[in-house]
Length: 226
Length: 293
Ligand SMILES: Nc1ncnc2c1ncn2[C@@H]1O[C@H](COP(=O)(O)OP(=O)(O)OP(=O)(O)O)[C@@H](O)[C@H]1O
Ligand SMILES: [Mg+2]
Image (cartoon, rainbow over all chains, first blue to last red; front, side, top):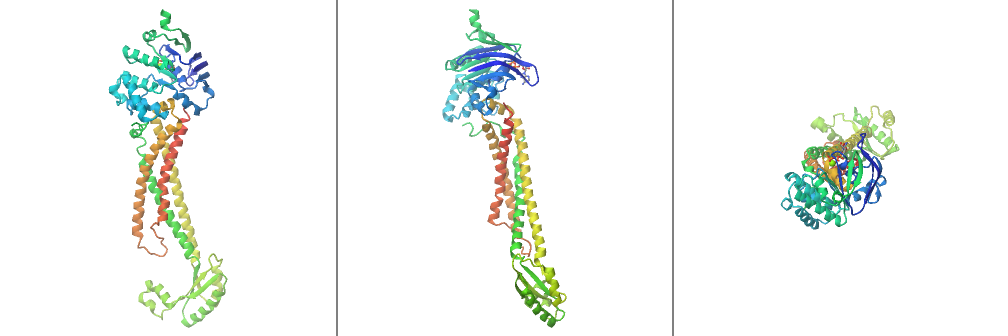
């Protein structure tokens, strides 16, 4: 699904933000990604959703070596990756429904069919009353849920979420985690970057920990506690 | 419901490209006027080329009408024997009088006036007849004979017309280039304004052609708006000029109104404006997108 070999990443001429990353995400796996602020979580996710090419090393996504994949072959790969951005990145002039429907349009799906699907999903994340609201009229937590709905609407093969529960209360956070688990059970590989140790501790999934630009894989917090 | 009414990129909030239809309208207006000038001059030059250049007029001064008549007979014989001459006919006195009437009034009909004898010579088209040599030969028969060779000054006029036509076409081409430059500038600024959304669409797996199509569609809407406005203004102006020029029948002033074929050619101008806007926007966006990973 996803394999990093000796990957290093720097911005421009700056210092290496990530160093010597070696790990594999097996298909259907579920991982958390933790690390202090500035440790490079977002940077690592950017490499995964093909927003950057690594400064060195090999990144394999869906079995393709990204460094030798022609640019024209990248869009179909990106379409199989759902991303919840740390800053949501909702499109301001589109309604919640239109934002969530965006990935379906790239996939060329039928409109009437998808609209029912989009409304259903938004209702499920508790936004039934805000289907046609503009993002700027929504609270931070509501925007976050629109962003999550957009990331999962296409049933991606790989879901990358950057602090997806940072702006919601615990009830909704757990509910969103169940959504991710449900998706994972249907086959999606999930990676969730989060600071929320308490939340991470409630789930039995392995943790990737970034520290000083290097990555270590540790067992689940819950497993360790038991 | 989505997409039908709204584009992914909020072009309608764009301050930077709002001026574009107006500039397109102005360019279409100027280009259409220049193209119309080229067409009018071209038609005039063609007319002069075909109709008049095969003629010259020989003038015999008439101090004494009897002498002049005798000279005229000799000169007619000489002219008819000259290679390249199809026919040589004296203009009737009445015809000459009619030609002079605007200057002389009724006195032109007075047979006592020393009116020169005129001989109208028709030449085979493209005949390489040197009118200066011919004049020397003719003046041996009758001193003071002058040849009015329409071809000499007319060919100068035709050359001038061709140059004016070329200059007008050059203006059209230059306007085309500035249209391309303007659209590149507007598209780049639109690209910068909407960079965040474009990047998002890109990361979500939109193909370059999908993003380019959005700009192309916007360029088409703006090009159509501007092209239509420019075309209507140009058509109104040209129709007005044609209306006021309809009664002008001066000999060498070309007709200033356009025929259906010429209107058809002019219609290419606004259509090209739309095509140029769309193509330029598309290529500009594709080049900018190529810099994304
Ligand atoms: N576009 C950029 N240009 C230059 N440096 C950057 C850029 N983005 C991030 N960095 C640097 O890379 C390092 C890692 O940043 P990153 O955003 O990946 O951290 P993070 O773990 O996501 O932090 P947080 O938990 O606060 O979101 C930081 O030192 C940051 O300053
Ligand atoms: Mg981050």
